[in-house]
Length: 438
Image (cartoon, rainbow, N blue to C red):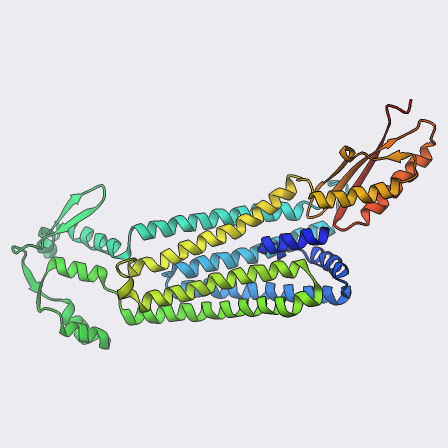
Protein backbone atom coordinates (compact mmCIF):
# COMPACT_ATOMS: atom_id res chain seq x y z
CA UNK A 1 0.00 0.00 0.00
CA UNK A 2 0.97 3.65 -0.22
CA UNK A 3 1.30 3.82 3.57
CA UNK A 4 3.77 0.93 3.58
CA UNK A 5 5.75 2.65 0.81
CA UNK A 6 5.98 5.84 2.89
CA UNK A 7 7.04 3.94 6.02
CA UNK A 8 9.68 2.01 4.07
CA UNK A 9 11.05 5.25 2.63
CA UNK A 10 11.05 6.91 6.06
CA UNK A 11 12.99 4.05 7.65
CA UNK A 12 15.56 4.14 4.84
CA UNK A 13 15.99 7.88 4.24
CA UNK A 14 16.24 9.75 7.54
CA UNK A 15 16.51 13.19 5.90
CA UNK A 16 13.10 12.72 4.24
CA UNK A 17 11.41 14.25 7.31
CA UNK A 18 12.53 17.64 5.96
CA UNK A 19 9.46 18.61 3.94
CA UNK A 20 6.89 21.39 3.75
CA UNK A 21 4.17 21.69 6.41
CA UNK A 22 1.47 20.98 3.83
CA UNK A 23 3.14 17.73 2.81
CA UNK A 24 3.67 16.79 6.46
CA UNK A 25 0.02 17.44 7.29
CA UNK A 26 -1.27 15.52 4.26
CA UNK A 27 1.01 12.58 5.02
CA UNK A 28 -0.02 12.64 8.70
CA UNK A 29 -3.72 12.43 7.78
CA UNK A 30 -3.18 9.47 5.45
CA UNK A 31 -0.98 7.64 7.96
CA UNK A 32 -3.47 8.28 10.78
CA UNK A 33 -6.37 6.97 8.71
CA UNK A 34 -4.36 3.87 7.82
CA UNK A 35 -3.54 3.27 11.51
CA UNK A 36 -7.10 4.04 12.69
CA UNK A 37 -5.99 7.11 14.69
CA UNK A 38 -7.73 10.48 15.11
CA UNK A 39 -6.28 12.54 12.25
CA UNK A 40 -6.53 15.96 13.96
CA UNK A 41 -4.50 14.76 16.93
CA UNK A 42 -1.97 13.06 14.63
CA UNK A 43 -1.46 16.25 12.58
CA UNK A 44 -0.92 18.28 15.77
CA UNK A 45 1.65 15.79 17.10
CA UNK A 46 3.56 15.80 13.79
CA UNK A 47 3.45 19.59 13.52
CA UNK A 48 4.69 20.23 17.08
CA UNK A 49 7.44 17.60 16.91
CA UNK A 50 8.85 18.70 13.55
CA UNK A 51 8.69 22.39 14.52
CA UNK A 52 10.61 21.65 17.72
CA UNK A 53 13.21 19.67 15.75
CA UNK A 54 13.58 22.55 13.27
CA UNK A 55 14.03 25.18 16.01
CA UNK A 56 16.63 23.00 17.76
CA UNK A 57 18.36 22.51 14.41
CA UNK A 58 18.77 26.31 14.12
CA UNK A 59 20.10 26.64 17.68
CA UNK A 60 22.55 23.73 17.42
CA UNK A 61 23.88 24.90 14.03
CA UNK A 62 24.71 28.39 15.32
CA UNK A 63 26.21 27.10 18.58
CA UNK A 64 28.40 24.57 16.73
CA UNK A 65 29.71 27.27 14.40
CA UNK A 66 30.41 29.52 17.40
CA UNK A 67 32.20 26.68 19.19
CA UNK A 68 34.34 26.00 16.12
CA UNK A 69 35.56 29.60 15.96
CA UNK A 70 35.84 29.92 19.76
CA UNK A 71 38.25 26.97 19.86
CA UNK A 72 40.51 28.59 17.29
CA UNK A 73 39.31 26.47 14.33
CA UNK A 74 41.46 23.60 15.58
CA UNK A 75 38.90 20.79 15.87
CA UNK A 76 38.06 18.95 12.66
CA UNK A 77 35.24 16.98 14.31
CA UNK A 78 33.43 20.15 15.38
CA UNK A 79 33.83 21.60 11.88
CA UNK A 80 32.38 18.47 10.25
CA UNK A 81 29.50 18.29 12.71
CA UNK A 82 28.79 22.01 12.24
CA UNK A 83 28.67 21.59 8.45
CA UNK A 84 26.12 18.79 8.82
CA UNK A 85 23.92 20.90 11.13
CA UNK A 86 24.14 23.86 8.75
CA UNK A 87 23.10 21.49 5.98
CA UNK A 88 19.96 20.48 7.88
CA UNK A 89 19.21 24.15 8.57
CA UNK A 90 19.55 25.25 4.93
CA UNK A 91 17.54 22.21 3.78
CA UNK A 92 14.69 23.34 6.05
CA UNK A 93 14.89 26.85 4.60
CA UNK A 94 14.78 25.50 1.03
CA UNK A 95 11.78 23.34 1.95
CA UNK A 96 9.94 26.33 3.42
CA UNK A 97 10.57 28.32 0.23
CA UNK A 98 9.53 25.53 -2.12
CA UNK A 99 6.46 24.88 0.05
CA UNK A 100 5.52 28.54 -0.32
CA UNK A 101 5.98 28.38 -4.10
CA UNK A 102 3.94 25.21 -4.35
CA UNK A 103 1.01 26.73 -2.46
CA UNK A 104 0.99 29.81 -4.74
CA UNK A 105 0.15 28.16 -8.02
CA UNK A 106 0.98 29.88 -11.30
CA UNK A 107 -0.96 27.83 -13.85
CA UNK A 108 0.01 30.13 -16.70
CA UNK A 109 3.72 29.30 -16.27
CA UNK A 110 3.33 25.79 -14.86
CA UNK A 111 0.16 24.30 -16.39
CA UNK A 112 0.69 20.82 -14.87
CA UNK A 113 1.54 22.16 -11.40
CA UNK A 114 4.65 22.93 -9.37
CA UNK A 115 4.95 19.68 -7.43
CA UNK A 116 8.55 19.07 -8.53
CA UNK A 117 9.86 22.31 -6.98
CA UNK A 118 10.61 20.64 -3.65
CA UNK A 119 12.31 17.63 -5.26
CA UNK A 120 14.51 19.83 -7.47
CA UNK A 121 15.50 22.05 -4.53
CA UNK A 122 16.32 19.10 -2.26
CA UNK A 123 18.24 17.30 -5.02
CA UNK A 124 20.40 20.33 -5.78
CA UNK A 125 21.14 20.99 -2.12
CA UNK A 126 21.78 17.34 -1.17
CA UNK A 127 24.23 17.14 -4.09
CA UNK A 128 25.92 20.32 -2.83
CA UNK A 129 26.16 18.88 0.71
CA UNK A 130 27.59 15.62 -0.63
CA UNK A 131 30.25 17.55 -2.56
CA UNK A 132 30.99 19.74 0.49
CA UNK A 133 31.47 16.72 2.76
CA UNK A 134 33.60 15.03 0.09
CA UNK A 135 35.87 18.08 0.07
CA UNK A 136 35.96 17.97 3.87
CA UNK A 137 36.94 14.29 3.74
CA UNK A 138 39.80 15.09 1.33
CA UNK A 139 41.00 17.79 3.71
CA UNK A 140 40.94 15.26 6.57
CA UNK A 141 43.01 12.85 4.47
CA UNK A 142 45.60 15.56 3.78
CA UNK A 143 45.78 16.32 7.50
CA UNK A 144 46.30 12.64 8.28
CA UNK A 145 49.13 12.39 5.76
CA UNK A 146 50.95 15.43 7.17
CA UNK A 147 50.78 15.88 10.94
CA UNK A 148 51.00 19.21 12.75
CA UNK A 149 54.47 18.30 13.99
CA UNK A 150 55.76 17.96 10.43
CA UNK A 151 54.19 21.26 9.43
CA UNK A 152 55.75 23.05 12.41
CA UNK A 153 59.14 21.45 11.86
CA UNK A 154 59.16 22.54 8.22
CA UNK A 155 58.05 26.07 9.07
CA UNK A 156 60.75 26.60 11.72
CA UNK A 157 63.43 24.97 9.59
CA UNK A 158 62.44 27.07 6.56
CA UNK A 159 62.71 30.24 8.66
CA UNK A 160 66.27 29.57 9.78
CA UNK A 161 67.30 28.31 6.33
CA UNK A 162 66.11 31.57 4.76
CA UNK A 163 67.96 33.81 7.28
CA UNK A 164 71.42 33.40 5.76
CA UNK A 165 71.76 37.16 5.24
CA UNK A 166 70.74 37.95 8.82
CA UNK A 167 73.87 37.94 10.97
CA UNK A 168 72.05 37.12 14.22
CA UNK A 169 70.84 33.81 12.76
CA UNK A 170 74.06 32.80 10.99
CA UNK A 171 74.83 30.03 13.49
CA UNK A 172 71.32 28.60 13.19
CA UNK A 173 71.49 28.76 9.40
CA UNK A 174 74.79 26.89 9.44
CA UNK A 175 73.23 23.94 11.31
CA UNK A 176 70.40 23.30 8.78
CA UNK A 177 70.52 22.26 5.16
CA UNK A 178 67.85 21.73 2.50
CA UNK A 179 68.10 18.11 1.39
CA UNK A 180 65.09 18.07 -0.99
CA UNK A 181 63.69 21.38 -2.25
CA UNK A 182 60.63 19.86 -3.95
CA UNK A 183 59.44 18.08 -0.80
CA UNK A 184 60.90 20.65 1.63
CA UNK A 185 63.00 18.15 3.57
CA UNK A 186 65.32 19.91 6.01
CA UNK A 187 68.09 18.16 7.94
CA UNK A 188 69.62 19.60 11.11
CA UNK A 189 73.10 18.80 12.32
CA UNK A 190 72.76 16.39 15.25
CA UNK A 191 76.13 14.61 15.27
CA UNK A 192 78.97 15.19 17.74
CA UNK A 193 80.22 18.22 15.83
CA UNK A 194 76.95 20.07 16.43
CA UNK A 195 77.46 23.07 18.70
CA UNK A 196 75.53 23.05 21.95
CA UNK A 197 73.86 26.20 23.22
CA UNK A 198 72.19 27.18 26.44
CA UNK A 199 68.68 25.68 26.52
CA UNK A 200 66.30 28.63 25.88
CA UNK A 201 63.16 26.61 26.72
CA UNK A 202 64.20 25.71 30.28
CA UNK A 203 64.15 29.23 31.83
CA UNK A 204 61.00 30.15 29.90
CA UNK A 205 58.95 27.20 31.20
CA UNK A 206 60.47 27.50 34.67
CA UNK A 207 59.29 31.11 34.92
CA UNK A 208 56.12 31.32 32.78
CA UNK A 209 54.82 27.76 32.51
CA UNK A 210 52.06 26.00 34.43
CA UNK A 211 52.80 23.34 37.07
CA UNK A 212 53.28 20.56 34.50
CA UNK A 213 55.58 22.74 32.38
CA UNK A 214 57.65 23.79 35.41
CA UNK A 215 58.11 20.12 36.33
CA UNK A 216 59.12 19.39 32.72
CA UNK A 217 61.66 22.27 32.78
CA UNK A 218 63.44 20.76 35.79
CA UNK A 219 64.14 17.60 33.78
CA UNK A 220 65.51 19.44 30.74
CA UNK A 221 69.25 19.60 29.96
CA UNK A 222 71.00 22.91 30.49
CA UNK A 223 72.82 22.75 27.14
CA UNK A 224 71.27 21.35 23.97
CA UNK A 225 71.78 21.43 20.20
CA UNK A 226 69.84 23.73 17.92
CA UNK A 227 68.28 20.65 16.30
CA UNK A 228 66.85 19.66 19.69
CA UNK A 229 65.34 23.13 20.19
CA UNK A 230 63.65 23.07 16.78
CA UNK A 231 62.25 19.56 17.30
CA UNK A 232 60.92 20.30 20.79
CA UNK A 233 59.35 23.57 19.67
CA UNK A 234 57.56 21.98 16.70
CA UNK A 235 56.36 18.98 18.75
CA UNK A 236 55.36 20.80 21.91
CA UNK A 237 51.71 21.04 22.94
CA UNK A 238 50.38 21.96 26.34
CA UNK A 239 48.63 18.82 27.58
CA UNK A 240 46.46 20.72 30.05
CA UNK A 241 45.23 23.12 27.36
CA UNK A 242 44.53 20.24 24.98
CA UNK A 243 42.54 18.42 27.64
CA UNK A 244 40.48 21.55 28.44
CA UNK A 245 39.81 22.08 24.72
CA UNK A 246 38.72 18.46 24.31
CA UNK A 247 36.47 18.65 27.37
CA UNK A 248 34.82 21.82 26.03
CA UNK A 249 34.19 20.14 22.70
CA UNK A 250 32.88 16.88 24.13
CA UNK A 251 30.68 18.50 26.78
CA UNK A 252 28.81 20.36 24.09
CA UNK A 253 28.67 17.38 21.72
CA UNK A 254 27.46 15.20 24.59
CA UNK A 255 24.60 17.68 25.18
CA UNK A 256 23.74 17.49 21.45
CA UNK A 257 23.85 13.68 21.53
CA UNK A 258 21.59 13.64 24.63
CA UNK A 259 19.04 15.90 22.92
CA UNK A 260 19.03 13.69 19.82
CA UNK A 261 18.64 10.55 21.92
CA UNK A 262 15.74 12.09 23.88
CA UNK A 263 13.98 13.22 20.69
CA UNK A 264 14.45 9.76 19.14
CA UNK A 265 13.07 8.14 22.32
CA UNK A 266 10.09 10.53 22.36
CA UNK A 267 9.30 9.76 18.72
CA UNK A 268 9.53 6.00 19.23
CA UNK A 269 7.73 5.80 22.57
CA UNK A 270 5.14 8.59 22.28
CA UNK A 271 4.80 10.49 19.00
CA UNK A 272 4.79 7.59 16.49
CA UNK A 273 2.28 5.44 18.47
CA UNK A 274 0.00 8.50 18.81
CA UNK A 275 0.19 9.50 15.13
CA UNK A 276 1.40 6.51 13.11
CA UNK A 277 3.26 9.11 11.01
CA UNK A 278 5.91 8.13 8.47
CA UNK A 279 7.32 11.68 8.81
CA UNK A 280 8.12 10.98 12.47
CA UNK A 281 9.58 7.59 11.55
CA UNK A 282 12.01 9.44 9.27
CA UNK A 283 12.74 12.01 12.01
CA UNK A 284 13.42 9.23 14.51
CA UNK A 285 15.73 7.49 12.02
CA UNK A 286 17.64 10.73 11.40
CA UNK A 287 18.05 11.52 15.12
CA UNK A 288 19.08 7.93 15.89
CA UNK A 289 21.81 8.15 13.24
CA UNK A 290 22.90 11.56 14.55
CA UNK A 291 23.05 10.25 18.13
CA UNK A 292 25.22 7.29 17.12
CA UNK A 293 27.48 9.58 15.11
CA UNK A 294 27.84 12.33 17.73
CA UNK A 295 28.15 9.87 20.61
CA UNK A 296 30.90 8.02 18.77
CA UNK A 297 32.89 11.27 18.42
CA UNK A 298 32.69 11.93 22.17
CA UNK A 299 33.67 8.38 23.15
CA UNK A 300 36.45 7.91 20.59
CA UNK A 301 38.19 11.25 21.11
CA UNK A 302 38.03 10.94 24.91
CA UNK A 303 39.39 7.39 24.91
CA UNK A 304 42.10 8.36 22.41
CA UNK A 305 43.33 11.15 24.68
CA UNK A 306 43.20 9.13 27.90
CA UNK A 307 44.85 6.08 26.29
CA UNK A 308 47.24 7.92 23.97
CA UNK A 309 50.30 6.07 25.27
CA UNK A 310 48.71 2.69 24.48
CA UNK A 311 47.40 3.84 21.09
CA UNK A 312 50.57 5.63 19.97
CA UNK A 313 51.78 2.49 18.18
CA UNK A 314 48.53 2.41 16.13
CA UNK A 315 47.72 6.08 15.53
CA UNK A 316 49.45 9.29 16.54
CA UNK A 317 47.74 11.70 18.89
CA UNK A 318 47.50 14.43 16.23
CA UNK A 319 45.81 12.03 13.79
CA UNK A 320 42.87 11.08 16.04
CA UNK A 321 40.76 14.21 15.42
CA UNK A 322 41.10 14.22 11.58
CA UNK A 323 40.60 10.44 11.48
CA UNK A 324 37.33 10.59 13.46
CA UNK A 325 36.28 13.57 11.33
CA UNK A 326 37.00 11.52 8.18
CA UNK A 327 34.76 8.67 9.36
CA UNK A 328 32.07 11.20 10.28
CA UNK A 329 32.33 12.81 6.82
CA UNK A 330 31.78 9.46 5.10
CA UNK A 331 28.74 8.76 7.30
CA UNK A 332 27.22 12.17 6.53
CA UNK A 333 27.94 11.71 2.82
CA UNK A 334 26.03 8.43 2.93
CA UNK A 335 23.00 10.11 4.57
CA UNK A 336 22.87 12.89 1.99
CA UNK A 337 23.42 10.42 -0.87
CA UNK A 338 20.30 8.55 0.26
CA UNK A 339 18.33 11.78 -0.11
CA UNK A 340 19.94 12.39 -3.53
CA UNK A 341 18.88 8.95 -4.75
CA UNK A 342 15.38 9.46 -3.36
CA UNK A 343 14.79 12.68 -5.28
CA UNK A 344 16.52 11.35 -8.41
CA UNK A 345 14.02 8.48 -8.32
CA UNK A 346 11.14 10.94 -8.18
CA UNK A 347 12.46 13.20 -10.95
CA UNK A 348 13.25 10.24 -13.21
CA UNK A 349 9.56 9.24 -12.98
CA UNK A 350 10.33 5.70 -11.90
CA UNK A 351 7.45 3.22 -11.91
CA UNK A 352 5.56 2.56 -8.69
CA UNK A 353 5.98 -0.72 -6.86
CA UNK A 354 4.18 -3.78 -8.24
CA UNK A 355 1.84 -3.92 -5.23
CA UNK A 356 0.78 -0.31 -5.68
CA UNK A 357 0.27 -0.77 -9.44
CA UNK A 358 -1.84 -3.86 -8.73
CA UNK A 359 -4.02 -1.86 -6.30
CA UNK A 360 -4.56 0.84 -8.95
CA UNK A 361 -5.42 -1.68 -11.68
CA UNK A 362 -7.84 -3.45 -9.34
CA UNK A 363 -9.63 -0.17 -8.60
CA UNK A 364 -9.87 0.61 -12.33
CA UNK A 365 -11.22 -2.84 -13.20
CA UNK A 366 -13.88 -2.55 -10.48
CA UNK A 367 -15.08 0.75 -11.97
CA UNK A 368 -15.07 -0.67 -15.53
CA UNK A 369 -16.92 -3.87 -14.61
CA UNK A 370 -20.16 -4.03 -16.64
CA UNK A 371 -19.34 -0.97 -18.78
CA UNK A 372 -18.53 -0.64 -22.47
CA UNK A 373 -14.84 -0.02 -21.69
CA UNK A 374 -11.91 -2.03 -20.45
CA UNK A 375 -8.27 -1.32 -19.54
CA UNK A 376 -5.47 -3.74 -20.37
CA UNK A 377 -2.54 -3.95 -17.98
CA UNK A 378 -0.19 -2.47 -20.58
CA UNK A 379 -2.47 0.57 -20.87
CA UNK A 380 -2.21 1.45 -17.16
CA UNK A 381 0.95 3.33 -16.15
CA UNK A 382 1.71 4.38 -12.56
CA UNK A 383 4.87 6.38 -11.89
CA UNK A 384 6.40 8.98 -9.58
CA UNK A 385 5.70 12.57 -10.63
CA UNK A 386 6.66 14.14 -7.28
CA UNK A 387 6.43 12.57 -3.83
CA UNK A 388 3.13 11.25 -5.17
CA UNK A 389 2.12 9.28 -8.25
CA UNK A 390 0.62 10.03 -11.63
CA UNK A 391 -1.68 7.43 -13.21
CA UNK A 392 -2.17 7.30 -16.97
CA UNK A 393 -5.02 5.10 -18.20
CA UNK A 394 -5.98 4.35 -21.78
CA UNK A 395 -9.54 2.96 -21.89
CA UNK A 396 -10.43 0.67 -24.77
CA UNK A 397 -13.99 1.16 -26.07
CA UNK A 398 -15.35 -2.26 -26.97
CA UNK A 399 -18.07 -1.10 -29.41
CA UNK A 400 -18.50 1.62 -32.01
CA UNK A 401 -22.20 1.90 -31.26
CA UNK A 402 -21.71 3.80 -28.01
CA UNK A 403 -22.55 7.40 -27.32
CA UNK A 404 -19.61 9.69 -26.63
CA UNK A 405 -21.35 10.92 -23.47
CA UNK A 406 -21.43 7.37 -22.08
CA UNK A 407 -17.70 6.88 -22.67
CA UNK A 408 -16.97 10.29 -21.11
CA UNK A 409 -19.00 9.34 -18.03
CA UNK A 410 -17.01 6.12 -17.60
CA UNK A 411 -13.71 8.01 -18.00
CA UNK A 412 -14.80 10.61 -15.44
CA UNK A 413 -15.76 7.88 -12.97
CA UNK A 414 -12.37 6.18 -13.40
CA UNK A 415 -10.59 9.48 -12.83
CA UNK A 416 -12.63 10.25 -9.69
CA UNK A 417 -12.23 6.82 -8.08
CA UNK A 418 -8.48 6.53 -8.76
CA UNK A 419 -7.91 10.10 -7.49
CA UNK A 420 -9.30 9.02 -4.12
CA UNK A 421 -6.50 6.51 -3.63
CA UNK A 422 -3.60 7.46 -1.36
CA UNK A 423 -0.68 9.44 -2.76
CA UNK A 424 -2.25 10.03 -6.17
CA UNK A 425 -1.34 13.44 -7.57
CA UNK A 426 -2.87 13.30 -11.04
CA UNK A 427 -4.98 10.92 -13.13
CA UNK A 428 -4.93 11.14 -16.93
CA UNK A 429 -7.62 9.16 -18.73
CA UNK A 430 -7.81 8.79 -22.53
CA UNK A 431 -9.76 6.45 -24.78
CA UNK A 432 -9.25 4.40 -27.92
CA UNK A 433 -11.46 2.09 -29.95
CA UNK A 434 -10.80 -1.59 -30.08
CA UNK A 435 -9.51 -2.90 -33.40
CA UNK A 436 -12.11 -5.66 -33.17
CA UNK A 437 -15.06 -3.35 -32.61
CA UNK A 438 -15.30 -2.44 -36.28
